[in-house]
Image 1 (cartoon, rainbow, N blue to C red):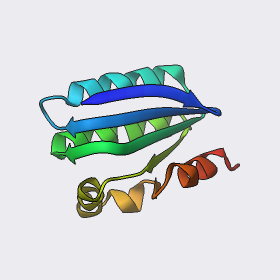
Image 2: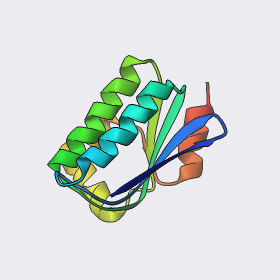
Image 3: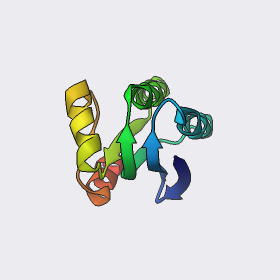
Amino acid sequence: MNADITEDGGVLVMNARGRLDAANAAVFDDGAKEILAAEPKNVLLDLDGLDFISSAGLRSVLTLAKGVRKNGQKLAFCSLPPVVNDVFKIAGFMEIMQVFATRDEAMAFLLSS
């Protein structure tokens, strides 16, 4: 699992790649802590390179989402591969998270008022 963090037009972006499971959720959690410490107005998780997500990975994502919301920031997800999209649907994340098909759609949401 790799979690690269970059800035794009006022949005802090985490690009997650590989498997997000119990064996490597700590890598994601470290990136999440970095994001929360930076206190950006907008956060985007681009999951295009994520091959797999387990319940431990979902817990990490939910923890980040709670932290972002607690800080009054906006959070969006984009480019979910089919297997990750299916897991988000089954877990009910599609109803509680802002999920977009493309990065452009997510950026437009985040940068709107």
